Image (tube, rainbow over all chains, first blue to last red; front, side):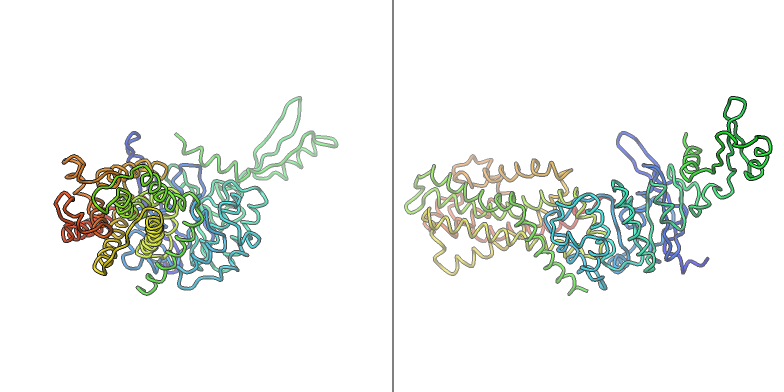
Length: 292
Length: 262
């Protein structure tokens, strides 16, 4: 893969913080990442895994201790005079903010559009994020989910080539999350590269082309959601009730096992079930392996 | 590009003013508080300091000078830490906007708030406290540069000081006492020449003392100049002191201002 079609390229990224009481803490401990242009890439991990630190380095908010970083062909920590032009091409949706409380949705989006060289139509963006009805509402009257959609509107108003979303749906109700996912997939269809962090597995599964599982500042695995942790090749668990107790067997060929059971039992096999590991089980086992 | 910086700066100014007028507390604090103080002090202290000079006239001169400090230094040193806490600065940092445009917006806000406050004080002073507007074009000119230099000094020092409060919540508690102490030391609430020597000398390090003295030279008759500590208005020293603070303040603002923590 040539680096020409990579939107983000990270090699050996390290960042540590020095706290007064806690001493030195390594937040990001040697991360390699590459995000292809036009894909949705999810950084999945528990709180404190290093997701936000990584993304904020990519967004140009933080410096790093070592490693190479390239976002749209630029080093975010060494932009010099290219800063404004580079920021014109990226969109950022931060974790919760409380700014612009006294302005209306329309005023905020129209104002931010002026910062960019080739912005989208503000009213269309407001409609896209589903805030048309709240157009003239003050920002401080919006619900958490609406507020978040406004954040997304501000992230995409400049027609970004890459959009960073940091835990975009934390605190959403299920319906709002579905609507939000549709919006993200629509942006992908427009060709926007999207890098999102999340600690929701279903979100990564619904949206991401590829997922990187991160914990304790290290990438544990990068793959598609369907193949994460060897999920597609994982053994199935066949279980049933026999001789007064629950019995189960792990197998690559569950159909054969069920056939054997059918031969052994006359009629219904008691409490028969065939399951494969859920993404959540895979994830827990991946995260668990690196704990302690 | 620089054209864009200017244009966005003006648009930020308009946005800042819009936000400001929608915050009832800030409007009341900026507009009514100084006028209220004027009524309290003007009604309590009715002494005559010299022929043709009442305490309320002396006090208004000081309050107009304080207005420059309130709307610039105090307002910004409290507002910027709050914006840092609320994520305003972080969000702006992620867009192509130049920091220069952000500061222009703040300067436009300060200047507008200051015009309104000074206008209100002048109006109430003339209507209720027998304040005499400057009689000569020379005094009007001096008034103009005092306001201009004073507000710019106040703005850059406010930006510089905004890095001192650790959080938006605590900012007011850090900034307001400094302003109030300076007001006492600089001859706003008391006649400056009656203050202890060490207070006068301390105040002379800061711009407010020079601004109050300058405003007195504009609003009080020239015959009162002999009652000043130096027995003169010291107009050229006022100009020099403000210019020094302008340079120091700008350097400090450039050096200390930070976008969100890296």
